[in-house]
Every structure is written in C-alpha cells, then in structure tokens.
Length: 84
Image (cartoon, rainbow, N blue to C red):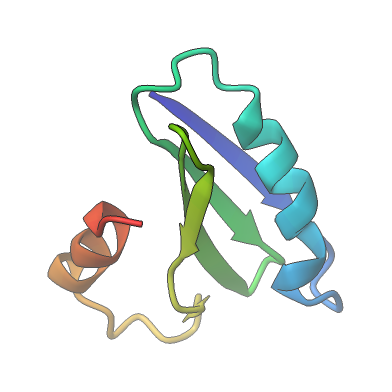
C-alpha cells in the first residue's frame, strides 16, 4: 500500500494540491491495490483514493475540518473504503 500526502498553505484551497497529489499517487508500482492520499492545508483535509486498472479512477472524501472533531471513525472508514 502506498500513501501520498500533499500539503499547501492554509490560504490555499485543497483543490490546488489535487493534481500534484494524483501525480505522486500514479507512481505506485503495484497497480492491483488502491493508492490512498491525503490533501491538507493545515486546517482542512480530504482523503483521496486512486484505483488503477483498465481505466484510472479516483474518488475524494468530503472535506474535514480539523476544528470540527465530531466526525466518527465509522464515517471516516466508510469514506476511505468506498469503491471508486
């Protein structure tokens, strides 16, 4: 399993780092397993899952706020393990 992390300054949108994170994730040498990524700007974060195969597909989680700790582990697990 490969996990890639891309961080940007807090004044930037998370979407600014998505292309760079996907580039890192595409370098996974084991295409049969998904690659996971994390985008953060210090106060918000978003998880990314990339599946390789005949077609490249990626999915993103909702945006999580570091100051809003009311998310449950079950909800986070469901977001991460969902199929693309």
